[in-house]
Length: 289
Image (cartoon, rainbow, N blue to C red):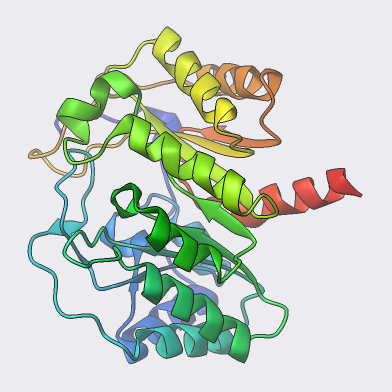
């Protein structure tokens, strides 16, 4: 935590009318966002544009990944009113593209899939024409839980691989690299019309060869959209930063990913999994026409 961030990692502070409106709506409805819980560096830009990534199923995660700032522990009971409150917040903010994610809820038999389904349905009920992306946990690889979510038919499903395979035991000890790839493959098999997306962090000690191998694995799982961003250590208790990648290196990674077949790639020091999320879908739809 004592290392000084490079100049290209500077972010602007929040402010402005739209920023304040987003905060007010979230506080009034007592809703959570991953933007705040995970200390996203783009929160000022996104809130300032009137957007936010809603975090459902509470703000306490059952897993303890070494990179993540979200609180871990024993979650509170599921709030059955949450889907409606999220949908109403989407309407209040006038969003046309919304991203829904959650903490990992290994304490629930379906991993929270039913609440994802209900939230998508409620957003559609109150917000005609709204495009929905969901960023999901692995549901422990449970195909039945995944089918529940797929029945809601969001336009995009994102499941982040997060780190290269070699780092899973130390950085994501409760996750499994192959299980995450399996989730992405299952989405393609069961609902090929839904666009598939994943994200990768760099700076945790991975090699270039391992990054490229991860790209290949994600493409083999038919992932279309990819985000690549710099890991930033939230506190001294989290995994240390092993390397700061330069903007030029992120461009090289983007070009490599494009070369092997990803439809859309966002790659940069401050890129996170939902950064400019609507651009990927817009590009995909444009290409399909």
